[in-house]
Image 1 (cartoon, rainbow, N blue to C red):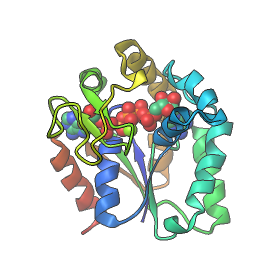
Image 2 (tube, rainbow, N blue to C red):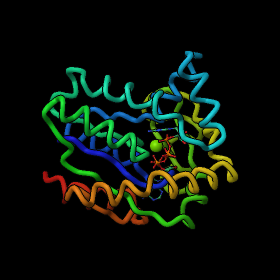
Image 3 (spheres, protein in one colour):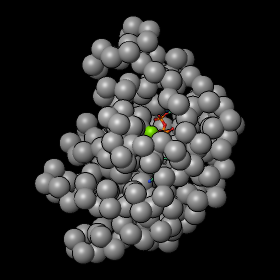
Image 4 (spheres, protein in one colour):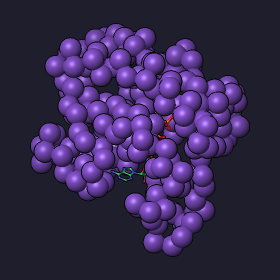
Amino acid sequence: MKIIMLGAPGAGKGTQAIMISEKYGIPHISTGDIFRANIKNGTELGKKAREYMDQGLLVPDELTCDLVVDRISRDDCSKGYILDGFPRTIPQAQALDRALERMETSIDYAIDVDVPDENIVNRMSGRRACPGCGATYHVMFRAPKTEGICDECGEKLIVRADDQPETVQKRLTVYHDQTQPLIDYYDKKGILKTVDGTKHVDEVFGDITAILGE
Ligand code: AP5
Ligand code: MG
C-alpha cells in the first residue's frame, strides 16, 4: 500500500502517518524528519535545508526529489510506504510520477487531512517534538505521560524552530500557494481521499482506516 499524506502544516499528517505505519507495517517517510535529522547531524544537506526551513520556506526541489526517490527504492519499501510532507509542489509530484513509472508502480491513496487555518496556529504553539525518535505531542491534545519527556524513547521534548507564530503564518501562505494545488492533481487521478482533521486524533485515524481497510 503506497500512501501520500497531504495537508497544511500542523494538520496532523505526522501524527496519523506514524499510526498508519504501525498498523499496516509500512515505513513512514517524512521529508521534514529527514531534513531535521540532517540538521542535527550537521551534514551539508542539513546546512542547506536549514536556510529555508527556519524561514518557513520550502527546501528547493533539487535537494528533495532525488532523496525521496532513493528512499522509496530501498528494500523495506517493497510492500509500500507512507510519504509525509512529500510531494509539496507540482514539480515534485511530477518527479515522483516519473520515478514510479520507471518502477512500474503507482500511489494507491492520497489522503488530505483537512484543517482550516484558524485551528493551525493554536495547534502549533502547543506542539512538542522528540528530536530522538520523531514522535509528536501536544501540551493539551496529546500530552506525554511525563511533562517534557518522550514516552517512546525518554528524550527531552523540544519546540520546533519553525513553530514560532510568524513562521507558521509564512508556512501556511507557502502551503496555499505551492502545496494546495496537489489536492486537485490527485483528485484528477482519482486517488484523493479527504478526512476531517479537526476531529480527535483517534477519530481521524478511524476515518483513515475505514478508507484503507482493516
Ligand atoms: P514538515 O516537517 O513536513 O512540516 P509541515 O508540513 O509544516 O507539517 P508539520 O510537521 O508541521 O505538521 P503535521 O501535519 O505533521 O502535524 P503533526 O502531526 O505534527 O516540514 C518542515 C519544513 O521542511 C517545511 O516547512 C520545509 O521547509 C521543509 N520540507 C519538508 N518537506 C519538504 C518538501 N517535500 N519540499 C520542500 N521542503 C520541504 O501535528 C501538529 C500538532 O497538532 C501536534 O502537536 C499534534 O500533537 C497535534 N495534533 C495532531 N492531530 C490532532 C488532532 N486531530 N486534534 C488536535 N491536535 C492534533
Ligand atoms: Mg509533520
